[in-house]
Image 1: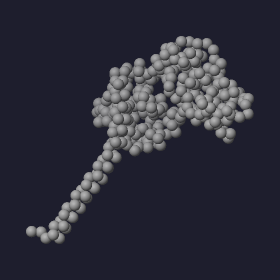
Image 2 (image 1 turned 30 degrees about the horizontal axis):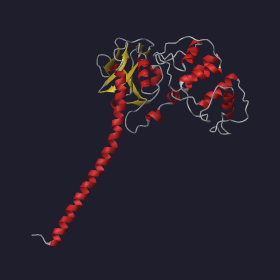
Image 3 (image 1 turned 60 degrees about the horizontal axis):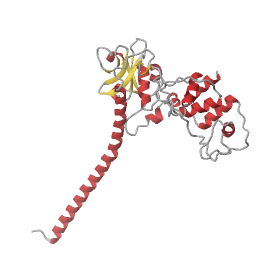
Image 4 (image 1 turned 30 degrees about the vertical axis):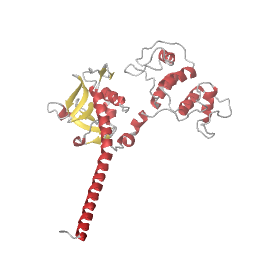
Length: 321
């Protein structure tokens, strides 16, 4: 029979062991919880990419094709990535020149895989979707799934892979390692930059001595341009603010360009995403009539898409050349 002292020691020891077990359980649970949530988010991103890519299976091959009517290999990869909000260059060679090289043994879903099908360097690419498979637009069957190790064809023609966006938790590839050329493709034109370009192209001069916008400082680099476009009635603010670092949609830019360059004429367009009663419809018709825009290759204009710097440059080049 235990003495009171021995009994107390045993009880204390039991309580200590219970507390330690509970502490270890909580630590383990917190680690599991903190690591599982990003993994699910990553899985969702990868799944979205694969589901998007697979949704075009059977789309025919078309040399130079960049739309759902027909894709060539790089037109397909560019289109699928665009649906995920990721911009990559147009051609296979340009896509191969970007991103981070990846060993075949380290491939992850979303990596671009490249092949030599012509005998003279990289000439074909696709998107790795896991389990040794990639999805691509083949010249024989259109969009399809193949094995990168296919001994009959693809295995011997495999060149390498590039990662332009990493879907794994905590990755910085998407924001830090994408080359400058790719980053420029998704740089948006700010309202202040657009104002400055219009002033430069149209030779506008300010009439007012100071800005009426509360968010435009006296030392703002585009101050004079902002005043000039405001004086000309090309830009208007919102609630007394200009929002110089803000971005514009393609619909908003259509209105600005038509009014700034005093464009005339109109041709009714048939863009899938532009209802005839939309407020920007006539501005878009005028741009189209003057061959300033042709819309996207998929039949859309991109009403709500933010204007990229490269798109804005194309518009202004067409207006001034």
